[in-house]
Length: 224
Image (cartoon, rainbow, N blue to C red; front, side, top):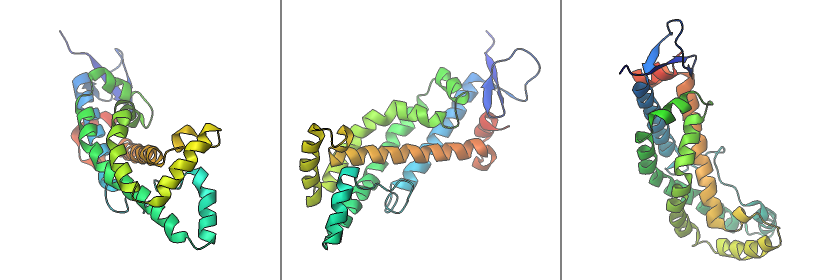
């Protein structure tokens, strides 16, 4: 039985039985290209974020204080407690930097097990459809892996425990969003936001200039 083939043109896919395509790929080849893009983007993002100042030194992903704590932090700074506030912000971002490398194995596994149907859907998708696939497959299990690391790194800071006690009460009255009522869960969520943001940036680079990757299969899938 002849393998089905589909067309990649201008970075998107379209099934055709008409005129000869600019270049056509077997679906298995397209799947291999998407797997390569997934793995490349994941490893680049983990390498960028999972090191000292990966979060703290990057304004795009630097984790700020929860909104509920921000006003209190301004007061603490005003009365000479800046060091305590800075210590908390640093611990939050260091926690994310420590947790992110744990994502490497799960992200690579997700990339390598992608189905042909998933690959076709991703090629036809948006500029960050590879990243959206990753997020859908791995965000929840990654949160479970990150949380203990984040908890260990932040619970040593006394201000973190005080925040949790206050925010828990405030959330009962709707003053704090549920996802922000626990500092460790807040940091875990922000760490994942940062991770998928940077995977998305890597994906955009691949789509914009697949030749730069030096990968034949990526050039075939995403090239014009």
